[in-house]
Structure formats: structure tokens, C-alpha cells
Length: 254
Image 1 (tube, rainbow, N blue to C red):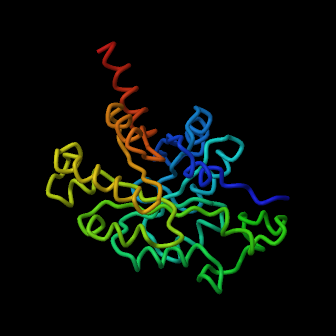
Image 2 (image 1 turned 120 degrees about the horizontal axis):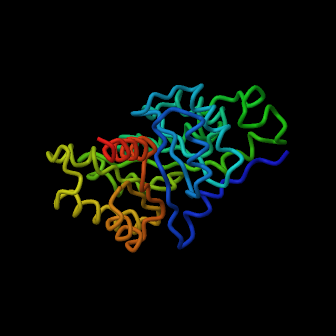
């Protein structure tokens, strides 16, 4: 059995933006529906959604037959969280609240086996190696792993250039909601100051030779960010689609 290729990681090096959807329902059933809808990637959220390791595994298995690439966001970027997510087969991680170069370097080391890193060696009992069905998994794994880090605070913006220079960081993702709150604009993710700083961050990420990403439910802003060179853009969330769709139908008869 061959190690699965990380087509998302390769796509970040092309001119085509990868469009994604947030999975926050914590359901393998809805994850499979979204994976079959045609998105380039789906984000299994462990930070704000009711996901644990078991439900994350179930969603990875549910989306595996589809072209849509699964990205997993842990509740926080720790060596222990990264180890478990990699072992259950995640190949791309989005680490929230990235604020320093050292934090980024720690995450890079967490993604790699010794001597380059500190990832625990347990692939024989892990889905990642298909339980040792993938020959020489330990030496091949790093090439197919993709590390994305999330810039969503004032401190993250201040240290963005240093974070972007870290070898092993593949992309930097701007989180508008937390960024707005950090700047004193809670609930105003389209505040002019926030949008201006996002534009500047995208340019700085590009200048560092890394892939910029962003979340927006505004189709106007999404197209603007794509035109600016964003390589991965989240444009929807399963929870929002369900909530808005349900309310719309109910209101038609109320």
C-alpha cells in the first residue's frame, strides 16, 4: 500500500485557489455530505466544535473516498494533540492562535519524527501507516504532511514575518473574527481596520513565499482575496448552512 499523497499541499504551489468549508457539526454523516459537494477541502474543527479524537477519526474515514481534502484543527497546538491527530491519519493540520516564531518551530518539530522532530514513534498501531501496510512510513510521512498556522491576534500580526520564515510552515491562515476581537472590534470582522490589516497580512505572507489563507462568508471578499493571491479560502460552514436553511424554510410557513 502506498502512502496517500497530499494533493492539497501540492495545490498550494499552483495558481488555483482551493475553496473549503468548515465542519462544525461533529458528524461523520454531514462531513461526508460536504465532502461530496465539490469543495477542495473540508476543515474538521476541534477548537470550537464538539469534536474529540473519536469523532475526528470518524470524519476522516467518512471523507476518505472523496477528492475533498480533510484538514484538522486541534483545540490548541500542543505536541500531544499533533501526535494523536497525525496517528489517526490527518495529513494537514491548522494550528490556532499562532503568535510566535518559537511556537511555530515547536509545531514543525511535532510534525516530524526524530532526529528532525519530536513526534512519537507509534506508527505500527496507527491508521496513518495503515497499521504498517505502508512500507517505510516513518521515513516518508513528513513529505506528505502540511502545516498551516492561524494568525488571529495582534501578537500574531506583529510576529507574522518571523512565523512565515519558519521552514516547515506551509501556509498562514487569517482568522478574521478573533483578529477583530483582538483589535477591539468584537463582532466586527469587516471593520475597515480589520480588513486593512488582513490585506497587509496577505501581502506579507506572499512576500515570504508561503501560502495565504482566510475565512470569509462574503462572496465579494472571497473573490477579492482570491484576486490578491490567497491559496486557500473557507467560504462556508456546515452549521451555518443548516441553521440558515432551516430558518428560511420555517419562516416561509410562519
